[in-house]
Image 1 (spheres, rainbow, N blue to C red):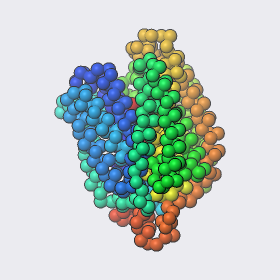
Image 2 (image 1 turned 180 degrees about the horizontal axis):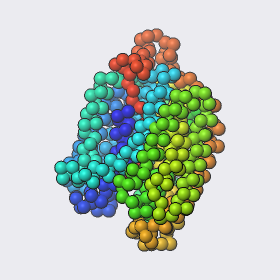
Image 3 (image 1 turned 90 degrees about the horizontal axis):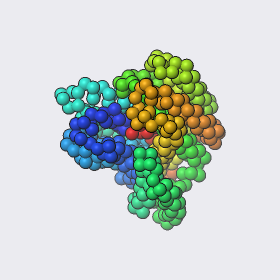
Image 4 (image 1 turned 90 degrees about the vertical axis):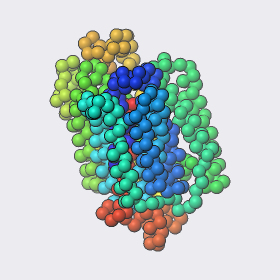
Length: 512
C-alpha cells in the first residue's frame, strides 16, 4: 500500500511545482517537458519487463529493488543542481517504478487466497482515490510552505522516509514468491516491447507542443508493426521454450481479454478528464493549485468509500452489474458537472462542484477495485507478473491516447482564440476554457458509454482465482502452498504481504 501510494502521488506532485523549478534551476521549456514526460515514458516502457522479472527472480526481491531505486532516484531529484540532472533522475525514477509497481499486484495475487483478495483490492481502491488527489495537493502545500528555504525540493525528498519505511516493512512482512517453473528473460521481447511503447507514447506525449510533426505520425503507425512482430515472436517463443515476455495464452481467458479492453478504454476517458479538469480550474477559472487540490477532496473520499464497499459487499452479490452501475454513475456525474458549469459560469465555486464530483467519485470507486480483481480472476499465479505488467501498460497506453485526444476535444475548441491558448488567464481566456471543458465532458461520457457496452463481455461474476497450475494448485501440498506464498491470510501473521494493487491506479499519470 505504501509503495502504491508513493507512486500514485509522485506522478502528479510535480505539476504544480513547475514554475518554482523553472525559476530555481533555470530549466528551459523543453527540460520542463522532459521532467514531467520522462517519468511516464520510462514507467510505461518498463512495466511488462518489470512484471516478468518478478516472476523469474522473485516478486519480493524485485519489489524491494524497485522501492530502493525509487527512493534513491527521489533523493537525486531533490538534490538536483541542473535541469539535466533532474531530467535524468526523473527517468531513473520512472524506470525503478516500473520494477516496483507490477510486483505490488503480483504479491497480492500470490499471497492471498482467492476469497480474501477482495479485501485487499478494496483497500487498493481507497489508495487510488487518495493518491489521485493528494499528489497535486501535497505538491501545492510543500511548494507554498518553502520548508527550510528548499522551495520545490521537498516534493521529492518526502519520498525518502516513506521509501525507507517501505523497505523495512516490506523486507519484514512480504512473503517471497516466484513462478513455480524456471523461466528465462526474453531479451528480444524486452527490446520489442520497449521500442513499441516508446514509438507510440513519445509522439502522443509531445505531439501537440511540437505541432504534430510527420515523424510523430510515422512513429505511431510504425509502433503497430513493432507490436505485430512482438505478437508473432512471442507466439513462437512460447512454443519453443515456454518463457515469453508477454504470455499470449492469457488472452484465452475471457475475463482477462475483456478486462484489458475495458482498462484501455477507461484509461482514455480518465486521460481526457483529469487533464482538462486541471486546466479548467487553474487556467480557466484562475484558481491556485492549492484551491484546485482542495476542490478534489470530495471526489477522492467518494472513490475510497465506494471502492471498499464494491469489492467486499456488492460485487460478490451482484457481479458485473456493479461495475456497469459505476459507469452509469460516472456518466450522470459528468452530465451534472456540465450543467453546473454552464449555469454558474465563471462565478462557479468549489462547493457547487461537490455534488457532481461525489457522484463521479462513487461511480469510479465501483469500477477501479473490482475491475482489477475480475481481470486477474482466471490468471494462473506463475503468470501474475506478466499479467500485472500488461494491465499497467494498457492503462498507460489508454492515458497516453487520452492525452493525445485532449488536443482535439479541448484545445480544438479554443484554437480560434490564440490569447486564451497562450496565457490561460481568467478573464478573456476563462470562458473559452470553460466551454472547452464542457465540450470535453461530453467526449468522456461517450467513452464511458463504450465501456458500458464492452463490460458485457466480462464474466457475470469474478470466477475463482486460479491458484497456479503445474502442481501449485490451492489443493496442493503444504510445501507447494508455502512455495507459492499462499499460506497467509489478511491477518496471517508475518507473511501477510498486504501490498495493494496499483496497476489501474495510473490514471493520474495523465496529469504529467
